[in-house]
Image (cartoon, rainbow, N blue to C red):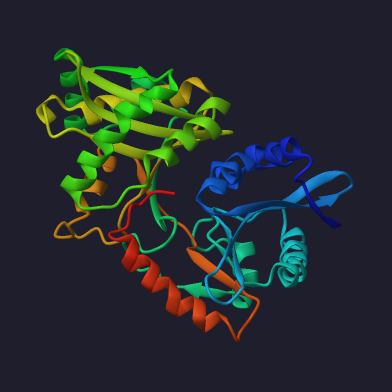
Amino acid sequence: MELKDFTNNEKFFDSYVSSHPNGDVLQTTFWGHLKIGTDWKYLPLAVLEKGQIIASALILIRKLPFIGKTIFYSPRGPLFSNIESLHFLLSGVKKLAKKHKAILWKMDPALETGHEDWQKIENTLVKVDTGLDFLGVQPKFVMTLDITPSLDTIMENMKSKTRYNIRYAQRKGVTVSLATKRNDIEKFYPLLLETAKRDGFTVRSKEYFYGIWDCLVSNNIAQLFLAHHEGDLLSATIAFRLGKRAWYVYGASSNHKRNLQPNHAIQWEMIKWAKGFGCTVYDFRGISGDLNPENPLYGLYRFKDGFGAKVVEYVGEYDLVFSRAYYPFWTRLLPLYKNLRGKPRNDT
């Protein structure tokens, strides 16, 4: 086995990520290109054996202020084919950390709680307690929908109220289209700001979403959806897709004509879009792990549950610590960063 930098062969790297059962857009070099615009660098590393990749990690690298150190982060990574390849990957990144003066490597793989191989290495990592809500960088609790059945069966498996809302929106003339022009971000972004103001969360800059268009939509692994009624834009969403999986990542909706159920209509079109590409799983992404109806976030669960989605709990967030001396600095810096960022966005 050997650890190799695939900066000069990104297509080969991304093909492994795409074919991996736990592969995610956030582990592709497309995501690395996007994050360059937010002061990260990226490094696509993979373990090779007999010319084939058997483990990989897209490592995002960011310099910390004041101390001349960096952090590594692999959103929804690393990926691996067996425990031996994972051990080799962890060992290789440890050596690489010295070159980059890295304090830690943060990771949050899309592995369900109790994953046997992960349990074998988690005692070498620091588990980060992110609570039940959205304090982690990526959500620990998600909801996924099996979209292998026919569309009629998927519809039939939904809660009756959800089916009614989808059909009601259709009867009332709500239409959903796929954005085809980069400038459609100008339609999406004001709606996102309206949603953020209503629901009390922060959003990224408009330029970030233009970056999503340039790095993801233009490469056919993301799509912007627009729901209209009589010329009024009522809802807009962005979905990602890779391999056999699709993700609902960003959603925005107007305060106007909410009774027409545009959010249900747009989700149904996204599900059909994902299935049309051969996806077998539609991932609604994050919910709170606290399913008490009194929880302010319970409505998010109820909406996604209406489509027939099931709750999945991932192993969570872990740090591989390279510098015990500087790690406390990071743990003090992170809460300050989160306070400055405001209420969690539950985005990427």
